[in-house]
Amino acid sequence: MSPAEPLRTVLRSATREVVIGHDTRFTLIGERINPTGRRIFQQQLRDGDLSAIERDVKAQVEGGADVLDINMGVPLTDEPELLAKAITMVQELTDLPICIDSSVVEALEAGLSVYQGRALVNSITAEDDRMAAILPLVKKYDAAIIALPNDHDEIPMEADKRVELTGKIVRVATQEYGIAQADIVIDPLAMPIGADTATSLVTFEVMRRIRDDFGVNMTCGASNVSFGMPGRHTLNGTWLPMAMTSGLTSAIMDARTPHVVEAVKAADVFLGHDDWGMAWITAHRAKQEAERA
Image (cartoon, rainbow, N blue to C red; front, side, top):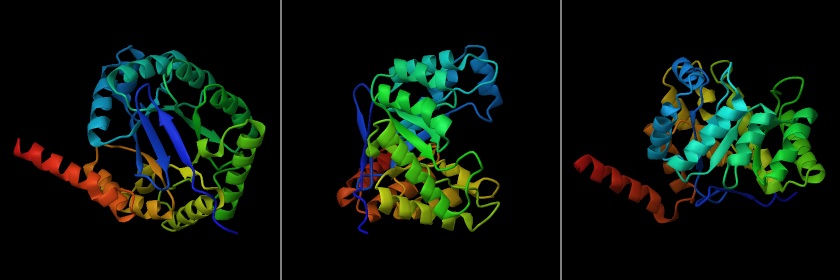
């Protein structure tokens, strides 16, 4: 069987377009605008203080993010209202496209309704009820969707099961909801190696098979792989280029870590995704200028 045609996922803000693809530079999705594990930020949001978002946007943009993930899952708040407010605010601060991140359907609808452009929605699983709740919204607002190949049972540890569930997601989204295959971005489930060092080998296999069988783009929470281990930046900065050679085309990551961002940019050069290394050279010159200044 010949490999599937590599697909391109197009995201847009009001004025800028970003393409996630197998033949383009790796897409960095800045993860920082997320209150999970940030107690002070959560309290600020409860108090209606959104000032930290401005700092987070600035840091992610300066770090090289191409897209910004926005999550406003704070207990004891009106998440739909908060997410819509945050998306409106971020659109005034930057022209980067947005990844709207929520497990609450009403919040996704509120976010999509104020977004000007073509968003990425984070996320669905292969569970029928999640697909039925979220895919009509994705279709209605002409968005793209991140999908995780796990179901009611658990996160499958075997490659075969993840590939099988990816097939189910692609089939249901395209045939039942009319979503283009190019607009499905699969998260191949990058698990922490602290619990099991063999888990990355399974994930790399899953990535290769998804790329070859379906041609779709992929993303993952990149910091997750090093959770519970020391020297996390080095692990993340090594893992991402390895994942890129297996077919990963984007990652939800902290763009404030230059070591990791530079590893990705260097891998783009070697994979032929940075013509003549011009982006690498330009960034290097800009860094030298900044140091001289």
